[in-house]
Length: 338
View: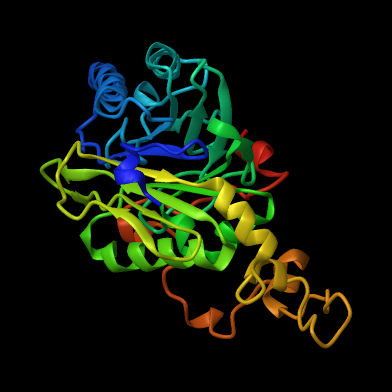
């Protein structure tokens, strides 16, 4: 199935390269420019390492490191020099790229954004992290949903970022919109190792979808990111897994979107994403298509509230040194910022 990590590429295969990028320290515009150049170099390395590579994936924080610095001087824009350099790197090496930026937001805190660029330099996917890792991360919650695009070899791609993957609704939404491969980029450190592994597997199996996930790696002198690049097949089995924790290692694997499509069409038992909306179809024609889940109905109605809501003690970022927010999310946020 894996073709020796993509060395033996099948006609229907998509070869992924997951870069366990060395965790950088980025505090100045000069640091940012230097790290941009380093990422460009790693795109070229990935191509040299695997001539059949279709998509190279960099972790969250590959450009900015883990400082959580919101200084405008080191934030990025889609039309800025960093993204321009990434686009040119994809063109020069004829490879698709998934990359991470901390994006300037004129109306509030920065967005933690991910992009996918085609092998011709076209910006094909633009995503803002929906679930920042609170209370630690100061990023504005994303407002673009979960886009799904047609990627290399016609594979349907989605991207989520780090903590997003701890919410099963994220993977379900990606698959519901057609994703056959879901990328998950992260900066996680070692305490999250086991949770990372089993959520990557459950996200794949519960949605008959390939998941390809990678973290930053190594130490910046304060934090130690874990690497843990892994590719999981649609049945939940691990195709490839980097367990050495070696910075700048590139884990490669071939995945088969055509087999994802086959499973989604032909599986009866455990075709869970289909069966969610067709409960008990062996007893009821077409299955029950209702929504029996209270939390879904309450979330949609704006009345989501846990039975233990009043007991929750961490409800903002003050425990991590962040000021309590005053802006509201949604239509009023721009007015509140002004």
